[in-house]
Length: 286
Image (tube, rainbow, N blue to C red; front, side, top):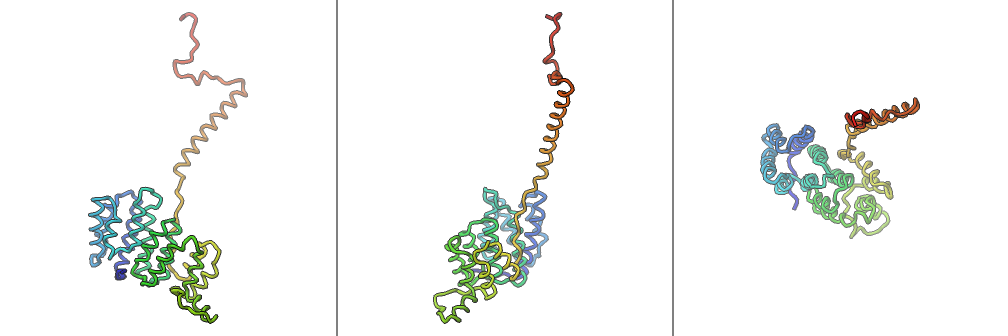
């Protein structure tokens, strides 16, 4: 049974915490020190400082935060725990900075007036854009307190359909627009649904059938107003490219000098000898 949603104040402080951690990680500070510093900057009347104390204890013993977040399931959502666990794997493909940015935007969205439709699309788009495991990710999403039993059942069903059926078709079949068309056609609605999405979402899904899912997500984000999913920024290779370019320029300059010397009458190879080597011996020294 999903836990109850938290007070908006808790989500505001969570968003602030994730923002602090994300910004200060750029200074290459250990997560343990960051949490200890951030604890004193949070509102003491919320439960977040106590949650941080538990995270710090687990972090000191195992070096991981996800196991502690899993035990604090009444405070952190399953999706938050899943993101942190993926960032703590050895693959290094999904970074903790990305997880913090995603959780920051989600917490700020929850602190206002979130809707199940908007939160589902945000979390599902996160899975798609970051190529996370659909089975584990959707299972974590289904346990969110904002989703009732019908939502949770449909999300779990979605695990078996992803990759086999177009996501736009699945969304349309779970919308009130599909229900409305069944009624107009005089067809029964028993055994159909559940109709979780509104007519607007159904029309958007219908208009994006057989298209790139990113177009569907972009349209849903515009109309539902949920946060834009953070994009993965390409790694800045400028610091690595400049020394490589300088070495290449030096090699080209050396080749040009050799070509100029050859045109003037030949290359003096004695200057390439090491000191004391390659010297022609004097006959008097023999």
